[in-house]
Image (cartoon, rainbow, N blue to C red):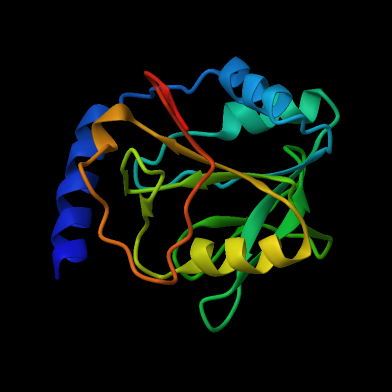
Amino acid sequence: MLKYKLRKNILKLRQVANDNVKINFDKIIKLLKKEKINKKNIGGYYPVNFEVDDLHILKEFEKRKFNISLPIIKKNFDMNFYKWSFDMPLKINKYGIPEPNSNILIYPDVLLVPLVAFDKKLNRLGYGGGYYDRLIEKLSKKKKILKIGLALSVQKINKVPINKHDQKLDYIVTNKSIIK
């Protein structure tokens, strides 16, 4: 119940605070350089419900010849990332979220992750389906991935309630700071 109430409160805060706030692309590039990431597969998300908009970041990556991808939600709370570009159509899934109309599976090297709340220990609170936790666990068995949460600074809380399945992020980039 604690997570449910927390989500509800933070989502209200995020809606009020998100006045088309943009995360600076240069912050993300700086992290990739710092981590010596030179691979070109970026996994993003299509922002809904007042999430931090990452589309301008994805567009910048695409201009720089990175392969960008978006998630497609599967059965059993599973999802995978599929190739997408800004000139490709999207389809709407059962949750009302745009997904790529693609069958080219991508294993991202860098994952941009939406979140509801976060803490200074890089724990994230999502919507409760566990999609990103399962995906991060699955991808981490295949390769090293850089996991970057995108959030507004008002989404930070003292302590995210976690369980054994929750996956930490490597960084959280907000409109005001980078947390490592």
